[in-house]
Image (cartoon, rainbow, N blue to C red; front, side, top):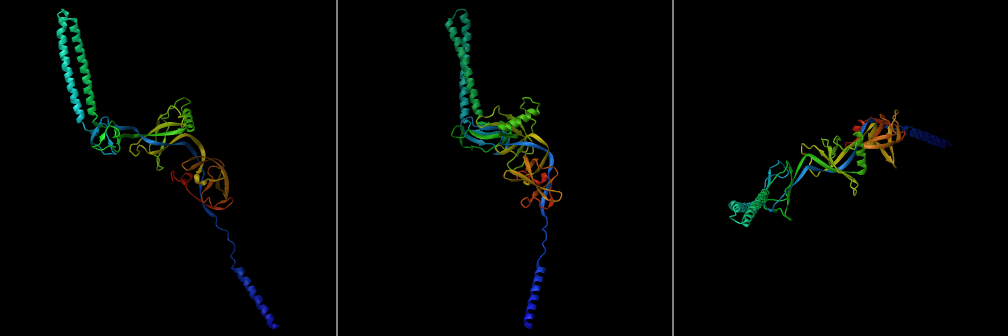
Length: 390
């Protein structure tokens, strides 16, 4: 009986020790630290509004260098892809056939002039004789007609000589303007000037300033036209020279020099519903070349004292837009907002947010309404947004 009691007592003691050990090993519940998030202030500022159009660059003059006579190309007197001056010799075509044609025309002119001198001499001799009836009136008429025919022959022969000289001059192709010349479509030794051989040998482009041709929709035309008409006092002027247009290049950078509209169509194209416009941009360094892709940005209004936030601070769910606002107690409030136009990865918030409020721009995927966070101030809202084109 005594051994049984001892065994029970030992079991109770072991059980008590095990329970005590379990209680000591269980860790106390510790609240997780607040989630660090990147925040920025919603800003208030004037926001210019733009319309962007896609276009293609052209030289202010793009002049084809055309072989105006047929013949074998003899020389090419320039480096392709370089600038040339007006009057520089570009190509020469074999001139021998045209020199021979000129000599032949000059010979015929000399013959015509000799015949004219003879007919004039005959008329001078017959005319006084006709006055005293020494010769018949028919002889006088014949001499007069011969002299007139001789003068006409000389005029025609002179025209043939002039034409031969012009054709001979076409064998030396000179630059009609200052500009950038491209790759030659023919090489010395090739026959040029008649299809299927090359007729247009090259293109010479004046690229300072450079043109950009683009089209806008009828809706965009109405927006811009109303803006310029109202700006000019309600008149019918289409003068857009004061508009400072920006040129955005294929790599996302903006051309340093603003441009202006220099030409436009007189009507909307009924087939495409677009309006064609040309703008000119200074190109002093020759960076821009014809044929480049370009985007034109045209201002049409300015939103005064608008609230703006980085585009990445905005989240969308089933067509509803939200922003996570950090309150004074560092708690998250989900705010439904009404976004407006975008400018350079910034979004105008029309309703639902005030300027100066802190918004989450990094860590949006982890935050929830009512959560306490550790806000880490970032740059200003404009600086927190990624650069255009990134």
